[in-house]
Image (tube, rainbow, N blue to C red):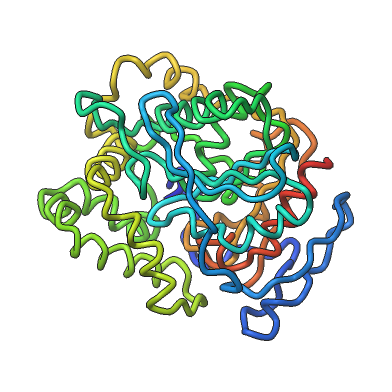
Length: 355
C-alpha cells in the first residue's frame, strides 16, 4: 500500500476531494460509460469497457532479468510504443486485465510483470536475499526493460507499482517517456515513517503493524491464512467494488509464490525502519531519502473511495512533480483503480503519453 506520510495530516479518510470525475457512480450501467475528458487531455478517447469484461491474459511469458526470472503478460503490437503496468499489494497482473487490451487497441505494446515474490516470477538463485526495499523493486523493472531491450516506456501503476514507477522516473528519467501514478508521489521516506501519524491514519495501516508482529508473520507464512487476509484488505480499501469469488481467486494464485511472505513482510517492516536494507541498495535509498522531484510528464490519479487518498485534489504532493502535469480524482472508485475503472486508467495512460 502507499506511503502513510503522503496523507499523515488527514483525519477524515476514505473520501478524498473530487477534482475531475472520470467514472460516475460505480454501478454496472455507469461503469461502462465513456468518462468525461478533462480539458487538458490530448490523446484519442479510449472506448469504454465494463470492469470484468476480460478474465485473463492469452499467455504468460518469462525472461531472465537481473536476479529474477520474471513472469509477465504482454499485449499489443511487438513494435508499438511500450507501456509498463505495475501492480501493487495485495494484487497481481489481473489488476490490468481490462486495461491491457484497451491500450493494445491504441497501438501500445503493453507489458504487465509480476513483481518479485508474486505469481510466476522467481529468484534465479536460492542464495539471493529475499529483500524488498523500494529501490530493489525499481531495479527489477529496470532489469526487465533491459532484458526486453526497452529503452523508454510509459510507466503506469498503483500502490507498490506507483512507488516503483515514481522511483524510476526520479532516478532514471531517461527511461520514462511519461508517468501515471495512482496516489501521487509515493517514494518512501523511512526516517519520516518512524514518527507517529494521526490516529485515523494509524488505524488505516493496521496490517502494516500486524506484519511487524510474530502473529502477523505466522499469518503470512500460512498460505490459506494470508489469502484470507488479502481478501479482507480488498473489501476495506475498495468499498464499492463488488468483485466475485472467481475474480479474487484468479489474483490469489499469485499469493502462493514461495517467496511471497518473505517479500511482503520485508517490504512493510523495512519501510517503517524495523529492519535494515541490504547494503547494495544504500546509495539508491540515500538519493530517495532526499525526496527527489519528478520531471517527466505525469498524470496523478486519486481514487476517491480509497482510504489512502489524501485530501486536497493532489495538493499534498503537487510540488514533487515539476514537468508537464495533470491531476484527476476518480469518483466512486477504491484502491484497485485500474481493475475497478479500467477505462479511466487507460485514458490517463494515453493522455500522459501526449502531455
